[in-house]
Length: 101
Length: 101
Length: 101
Length: 101
Image 1: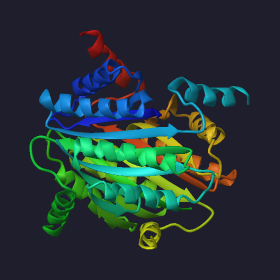
Image 2 (image 1 turned 180 degrees about the vertical axis):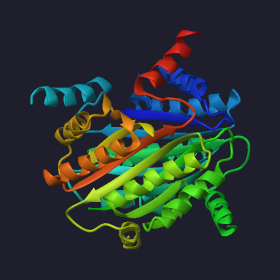
Image 3 (image 1 turned 135 degrees about the vertical axis):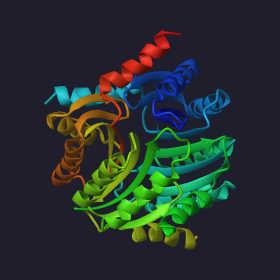
Image 4 (image 1 turned 90 degrees about the vertical axis):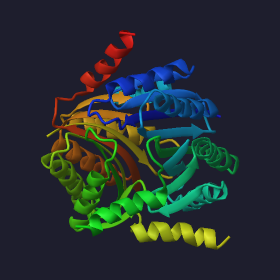
């Protein structure tokens, strides 16, 4: 089963700035073999559902192992069986409609 | 690693009413062995992180197998290494502060 | 327009423990006149859509005014025109289905 | 108060395909005067907090007025008082860290 997801990791580190941990989370997702797209409030990921969930677990385990004491992550997880879905396809579908106006 | 999460499944079924699928998702989470608490916009779940993610995968796979063509789920996933965390403990911590006012 | 929403405020304060700010956010929502229900990963709120959004703004403004430098809040916002919706009704609808099994 | 947010509108229309409504929501956000960036699981928006919330209300009111019976929207809402924040700045901060590896 293929999934398109969006993952936004919020580290609670004892610091107001969390960009190092956010960058590390994105890097781990990119290195997981999933297709990724960085935006201002998270990372779009695309791949087999088990791989998406495994990558999410790796992000939590790795950030904790590297010293982050607490994480609160928001995930949006989309799957469908009626047609294929992709990061690029979802963006293009919206653009096609708006360009057609 | 222990996790407290919140899972809100939105089925896109071709019907405006989705309560059957939402109830089924909650039932699957409850049957997974995780501690669960139902609220008006999702289900709190608590247990080992791999079990939480496995239950999430089971919900998607089962609802699709039972005929739902599309799912968009929002998950909040909390883990911490500095202290224990639980559904009951998180609610009680807030109540204790507010009762102490 | 009536709304049922779920609001989860994550303060980034320079401390790993954020329970004081989370409790304060819940208190502000309760004092706003909206119907509220506290759970382990946020607060369900119910009321007119403009009041829900005004309460959300008040939470951000008040927590900042009281010294919190950064907030990242996750909101789920539900509205519908085909029938009435409420915190109690949404929970009861799921329970009715599961009890009927 | 300035906000960077992410808005993902899920219409429950009685159809599995919701791209027309998702495109309309993005269009309404873009026309609101906020800075926007479309991605595969929502729209990043940036602007004054009251304007972000007003645009969110406009999306719900307009889609309902145009015939959509039900909406469930997920919003991530970030505000901070310690420094400026922007869509471009948040993406660049992550890229700078990763490029520096």
